[in-house]
Every structure is written in C-alpha cells, then in structure tokens.
Amino acid sequence: MTAMPVDISNYIGLSAVIFFIGVAGVLVRRNPLIMLMSIELMFNAANLALIAFSRLWQNNAGHIFAFLVITVAAAEAAIGLAIVVIVFRRAKNVDVDEVAGLRG
Amino acid sequence: MILFWVLAIALVASAVFTVVQKIPVYSVVGLLANFVALAILYLTLNAEFVFVMQIVVYSGAVLVLFLFVIAMLSSGVGPFAEGPNRLPQALGPALGIVAVGCALVVYTLARVPLQAPAPEASAQLGLAGQAGVFGSVADFGAALFSTHLLPFEVTALILMVAVVGVVVLAGDAAPMRSRGSHKRRRPAREREPIAKVRR
Image 1 (cartoon, chains in turn red, blue):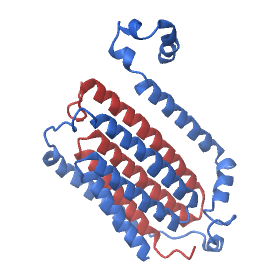
Image 2 (image 1 turned 90 degrees about the vertical axis):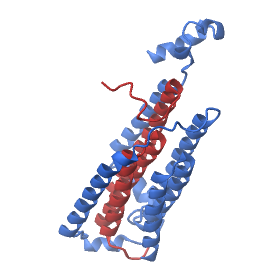
Image 3 (image 1 turned 180 degrees about the horizontal axis):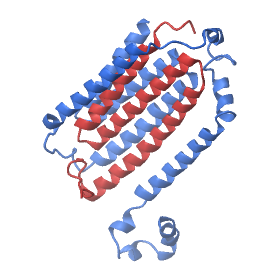
Image 4 (image 1 turned 120 degrees about the vertical axis):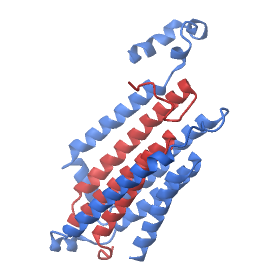
C-alpha cells in the first residue's frame, strides 16, 4: 500500500452522507424491507467511519469494532426479516403504516 | 485519489438508488453495488479482513436473506400493498434532519482537523498480506484472539441469540395458526419438544 493519498476527513464526510441517506430512507419509505436496507446503509456508514479512524490512528481496535458491527447488522437483518415475515403472514400486508397493532 | 472519488460517487449513487427504488429487488441490487464499493474502500484503508467480511457477510449472506424474503413475500400474493404515499409529509422533516446532521459533521470536521497522532507509525505500512503490518489479517487475528477476546465471544453470543430468536419467531407458526386441529396433522408426541422450547 502506498502512503495515504486521501485525507481521512473525506472518508468521514462520505460516511456522514451515506448515514443520512439511510436516515432519510427510514423516515420516508413505508416498505419495511427498504427500511431495513436503509438501516444496513447506516451500519455501513458507521463501519466506514470506524475503519477510517482506525486507519488514522493506526490501531486495530477499529477493525475489531467494525467486525462486531457487521455481526450485529447480520443478526439485526435476520431478526428484522423474521418479524417482517410474521407480520406479513398475519396481516397479509407489509405497509408499516397499516401495521399499527401495538399503537396505544 | 481518483479511486476514492469514483468509489465515493458510486457509493452515494447506489445508496440513493437503494432508497428511492419502488421495487425491493432493485433496491437489493443497489445495495449490492453499495457494499462492493464500500469493500473496495475498506481495502484502500488497509482493512483487509473487514474487506473480506464485507463481501462474505453482507454481499453473500445478508443480501441473500433479503432476496429470499422478497421472493417469499411476493410469490403468489401479488406485489406489496399500495398504501397512501407519505412522501409529502415526511420529506420536509427528513430533509431537515439530513441537512442539520450534515451541517454538524461539516462544522465538526472544519473545527477539529483530523491529524494522525503518531507520525512514526507510518513506517508500519507495508505490503498487503504481510504480518506485522497495520491492517494485516495476521495482526487482526492476533488482536481478535488476545486483546479483544471478550468482544469476539460477545459476537458469538449475539449470533446465538439471533439464531434462537429467528427460530422462535418464524420457525414453526403452523400450530399457532390452526389451534385445535393439530392432532390430525401431527402426533402430540412429536410436538412436545417444540412446545417446551417455545415456552
């Protein structure tokens, strides 16, 4: 690997942009599958920030943390998709505005 | 430098593509492009093992999970329900939050310039795949199994909880749906262990 050609703050800015695209996706979309994908985008943005800071400090801990985040994201996707399947089985509907059974 | 900007544009474009698409399968394709571009970006940051994990876990496992669920939900029952579009009400607050967040990040980056704390550490950077080099798989493994052993084991616990949770949630919903008629379908002796686990 050659010396770092790009400033780390560029990576952090890119990570912020991707994170907020994910936030916008969760807020705007109604399809729970696409909301879950937006959450994955946010996880990835966090990972990018972690790895960029890890590169900045030349410290492996950020990589370990990114590994942990990837695991949590996989678990979250599995459980979230299982919940989507259950909701779909019961309500025949995957619109999050229609699934309001837990609303007080 | 050029690689970074190409990847950055690809990342943002595929992220927007993912969020904007109406059909979930297209979103998955956008997400795939996003994950692959991000993995290459990890490689430019010397994170070799995370690069491999990104390809294997995200592009391999998570996206296949999404595709399976999409295939399952939309086979035979028609496309996803069309409800009232909530884009008009949600767009304003969403754009507001995004603008405020991006402004905060830019402000912070402008105030606190990021500087590498240890200049002598750049000597550690060498060829990829070499042990003793920052970001090499050997160093990652050594750190994972010695210094950071506890997070590694917590990872195992998280995966265990996820597996058990998914089995409990979606594993066998048939007895719940047709209560009372299960005797005809399945002998009670077979069902007993499942019931015990579920309780």
